[in-house]
Image 1 (cartoon, rainbow, N blue to C red):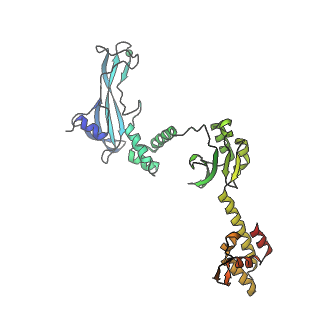
Image 2 (cartoon, rainbow, N blue to C red):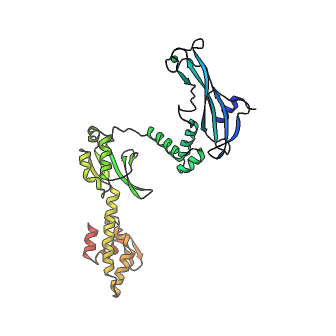
Image 3 (cartoon, helix red, strand yellow):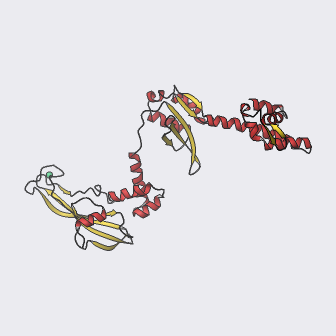
Length: 332
Ligand SMILES: [Zn+2]
């Protein structure tokens, strides 16, 4: 039979005060399910009374009965596993108080071992549902969620300072609502994510978390050009300049150029052969119209279908010549 030491190794229990005797593993039932019980005893000689802290001399703190508790531990094998721990109770001659032996395996008044918690957090680091994790760890979904929340709180950073350059962004998540995130624009690191991008949420967040001094230090904020929160940035960040994200600006310019081209192109969709030629050219060479004039070739003749051997700049000029609005829009 295994020694206490081996049992502790199997169960990842480091507390040497927990001892296991022969035949300590028994089959049983819990909550209508088959399970495995591992019987252990927790005992030691306390150095002092836990209540009055009087040192234990000549058995002034003496053993006085035991208390049993059932502790959930990570499954060993396929069945849920519980540690049936018989904990030593002590009484103090000095103050008369009684107390129970302690072990780092569990928190006081908690019946789920730290190892189960560690296991949950370990499983939570992989993409799994709370339901799956709770099934594997043999605890309820509510318990799993509570452990994850407790742990997440510990890691919530307390940023009292803000970087000089911020970038605001929004993104869709699971149920297609928009979340808000803000980024250190120099480092590219996400500082925080808010569950919603409505002005109330964003204002409250910055006002509650950062003092005016910290907010005044922000020099620039890069935002999407359509963002609703542009309006209250000056209120929150009195010294910040608002920068419209270059990407969004370029996107807007391209989009409006395309929209104009398509509406003009459609006007040429008639029974007239000349019009249809213009229509097809505008449809086919939409990318050329988006090109910067300085990037068009003015020297190289190439064969373009519907045009023949031409200069790139010449075909763009010809197409823009179909309509004044198209030409003006392109110039802008
Ligand atoms: Zn005492």
